[in-house]
Length: 416
Ligand SMILES: [Zn+2]
Image (cartoon, rainbow, N blue to C red; front, side, top):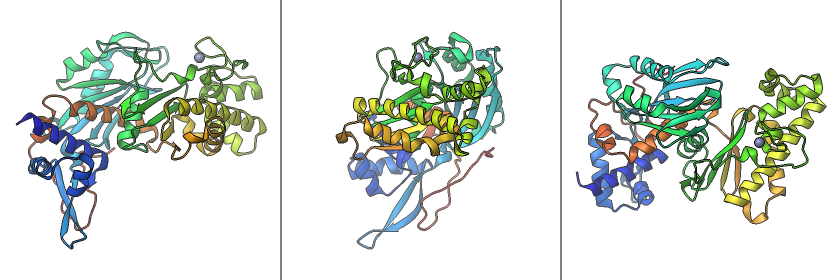
């Protein structure tokens, strides 16, 4: 296959992945390909069941135009989410819909090793038929902490220091494996599958035990010199605050506005309870604020104000069009979003506000798995052999053609 044609196929696949349902005219507008190149690429993908016709729409001239859709079940990814109190594994279809999942709780003080991760992926793969297994294209891993150039992970919550995860998974699985920090996989998920779809300047802010961001700036993922860009949790938001941060300094954004901090502030003031369990009870604080508890309301408002100021810094620095908030903070979004938005606006220049949206993530707790799946698709698209693996699958299910329909849903693995 000529090299240029592979580029056409990649452009067409990327556009279908982002927009799902298209006419040929939509595709030409989105890719800038000439009609002959686009037709060539579409025919190739339709012949192999990767793109399917799902309906027709009337054009202005009265001639029916085909509605084309990505066959979501044309391939699968293994998605692994190592961030959080439990580690999660899933089989997803091409567009990140979860078809099967396994979850393992992390026991405190019992670090896991690479073998546990490999065994869990094998358990997932063992549930599949041979045909389904042949359609698994790659594995994406969303991990906490840092990854060095050899794919070794250092992460406090896993008890890992330079653990060779990439090597362990690659040698055990026999298909490509891609690793990425959780903040960045979350913005992949939002940009490719969620609220920030198609946006070139978008930020995902995760507010949970800590606070961090993943950002697309001018269409490129923000990484930084050592891959550490986005540690917004440790900017000093209030130099006079007494709140102590895990990093050892006082007044960090994370120390005054993370969910663990909100819970700690409330329970230490209300019940003199500042033990480690209190840090996990943020939903109780939100509930008490909803019931009119004055202390809970004041703690939540203070955190929302600081978050608003933190977001104002991001807006001035990066000029985004969408900021998506995620993590445990979503449980209190009804209480906090308005205050966060107004405080952000108060500390930003007016020129930055038109067209700027702040939204709660719609992807929920599955965002890490969806992000890992989006990472696998994004990296696979540029990898040698991916187009052959995807388009070489035989006997793929093809959705039935329905007049005027825009969507096909056909699972070949039971969703759980
Ligand atoms: Zn800090």
